[in-house]
Image (cartoon, rainbow, N blue to C red; front, top):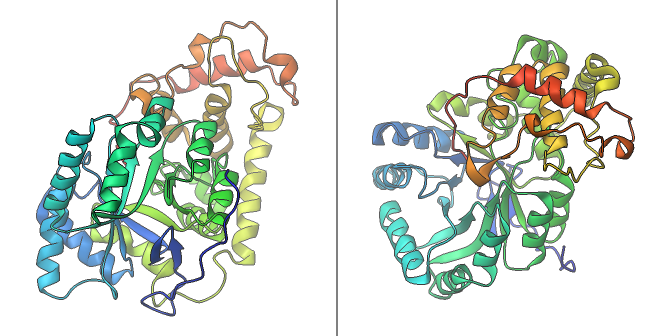
Length: 398
C-alpha cells in the first residue's frame, strides 16, 4: 500500500438520515449498489428492478459491457424512469466496467459504445473488469489501458477509475499501491475474510471499496441450508453477512437483483425506514460468534485455519482455497455452494482457480509448514471426493 494520504472529508448524503459513505472520489453512495448482471431477460425486467432500487434507497448502479444486454436495457430503463421523475435524490451514480486487453483505439471505441448504450455523457466510475493476472495490471498501469484511463478522465468521460479483481491478494495489493485507482471491487465475505485487511487499508487511504456478490459468492446465502439457518437463528444468514461487511466499513455491497423482491432485505437493513443504530447489534455479533463456534466444533481438528503457511505447493495446488471449501461444506452445511465452486476449477479461466485437489502428489512438502499439523494430502483427497460433481451453470456477477 502506498503512503497514506489524508482521508477525504465526509460528504452529506442526498438523504441526510441515511448512513451513506464516500466511494472514492464520488459523493456519498448507498450501502447497497444495484448489480445488473441478473436483470437481463428484458427491458421491462430491468425497469422494474430499477424502480424497486429507488424505493429501496439505492443510488449506485454497477454494470458492465460483458453483462450481455445489461447496459442497453439499463439505458432504456433510465431514460423511461427519468421522464417520469423516478430517480434517487441527487440522481444515479453509474459505474461500468471494461475488460483489459484492447489497444487504445479499440478501448476508446468500447467506452464510447458504453456511454451510448447507457444514454449518458459521462460515467461516474469506470473499472478495469478483472485485474486477475499480472498482464492485466500491466495493461492498466503501463500499456494501452493507462492511456485509455488518462484519456477518459482528461476528456471528462469518466469521473473516477477503479478495478475489479478475482486475483491473488499480492496482485490486488500491487494494484492498490499503484496510486492509479480511486476504487476497487473485491470478493469480501464473512466466510472468506482473506482480503479484509487489504480493504481496510484501502479505505483508510481514501479508496472506495465495493464488495462483489456477498450473497452468491459469499455462500449462496439467498438459499441457505437448514444447518446454517439454525446456527444463525434468530437471524437470517444473509442479513448477518451483509451487516458484518457494513460493520467493517466497506463502502457499498453489490446486490444482483433479478426481481424487485430481491431488494427487500437491503431496504429493511439500510432504507429510510430502517431502525437507526450500529450495523451489528450485540445479539447479531453473538450470533456470528455462535456460527463460527459451531463450524469449528463440526470440523474439530480437521479445520484449516487459512494461514497459507502451506504454500507454495510444488504442484501449484491452491491448498487454502480448496480446504476453505471443505471447511464450508463440513462446518456449515454449504455443500451445494462448495461443490459448485469446486467444479468450476479449470473451467472459468483466470476468474477462478485452475488446479484442483487431484493434482496433489502427496509429496509432504506442506506438512512441516502447517502450524495445526493437518494431514493436508488426506484432507485434499477427501475434498476431491466430497465435492467432485457435474458442474452447474456459472453466474458471471463480478
